[in-house]
Length: 341
Image (tube, rainbow, N blue to C red; front, side, top):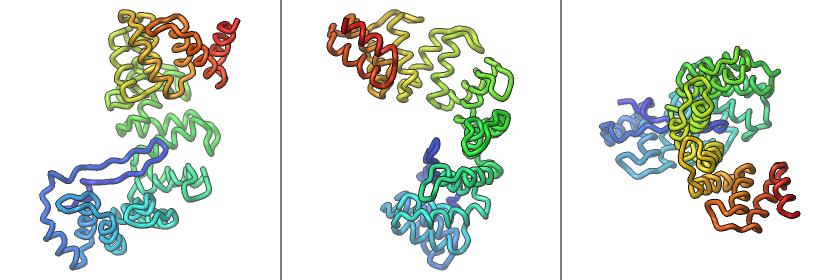
């Protein structure tokens, strides 16, 4: 049985992720695969590389994984070519070499492997191992997007929405986001929701914004969960539902989303749809402040100044206000100045 569609390692640095499909449910006869690989069968060589890369039925060994993948790649096996690109890109089983990563990604791309084209786009987009070149990034992203690799379409949407390497064009951004979103990519669904919410490139439509935020939120994408919570909280595109707002803010906050953590702090601090709970407010403000949120630092400062949810301590309050002020957040400057009068 081919392992080609059971495991892929994707390096996606912009909104990067690694997707790996377990081999544990696949019945493999290691000896049979090895025998076929030794006879020069490219598919078996590719499969054997995956076995070693993932330690299924044997010890994980990236050196041996590389050895078998390169044999298959040299026979023109497109998936093996992509994996060799990844191994050079990451330095897995071989010394990291971005030039060779690009070489093998290009070979895989020429055989229709969309994720390889995406990774090339990403290298030029971020200047990884090459001089940053948005024109080349767009070229490779378009190749990948036209092969229905949805993250590339989302990245193109982002580049047009923000005028990154191109003239800002919200209409084109919407086109690319829509293509990616309709393929089920949560990041694009979230961004398309934002385009509807703010009326960028299409008529403002809170109901459509809610719809796309919900699709992305249901896939566990934290920024979309936080935005969905706001829609419930502020009666936008749906009926106001404070309980739902808290539920979605909590999902996002538990994933470390700073905005959701800060908003949960305010919800508990002011009793918006919940009973006031200064202890919980302090806890969520602290989490957001620990990630550098200047607004949360001011809120913590106020709680220390007033002794809400924590023992009153004006020197600590002053320190939080000053931190925010030093980062250019004017409310922090005002509170710091007031406390020094």
